[in-house]
Length: 169
View 1: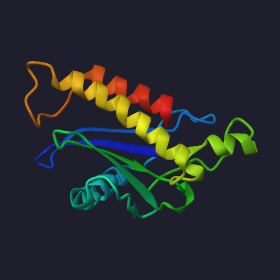
View 2 (view 1 turned 120 degrees about the vertical axis):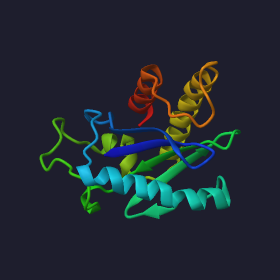
View 3 (view 1 turned 45 degrees about the horizontal axis):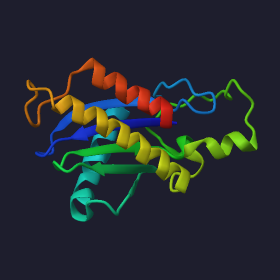
View 4 (view 1 turned 90 degrees about the horizontal axis):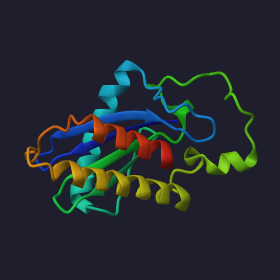
């Protein structure tokens, strides 16, 4: 399963982008999106932005078999996570056709977030991921050299996002 995470500033400008794969159930943590998926992911997240601004917390719409989760900060910065629940139904992502290296069991499939993207376990994992990224975000923007709505280029921030993704997603 692949994820696309982005931070959208107060002027609807992208401040940070990252894509990664799942690290659960034998995943290697590498995103399996094709090249054209980068642009499609940006489009889907930007299209979901209108709904986020309308309902601010309560709506998670499905776009082309993708779920979009949003975390809205107090400063009106949006953390958006695009999550693909069914890799085989997505036409613009390249997923391996070979089985995973470890045999799948019923217990492992309940751990996999893609099994049910609207389940309580998935919501909790996404919430914890967003909270950890928010803590890193606050530390990043408290830098006296950071200006509001400036693109984040910090390798420390990027590594904290990747670590949080491996930990929760």
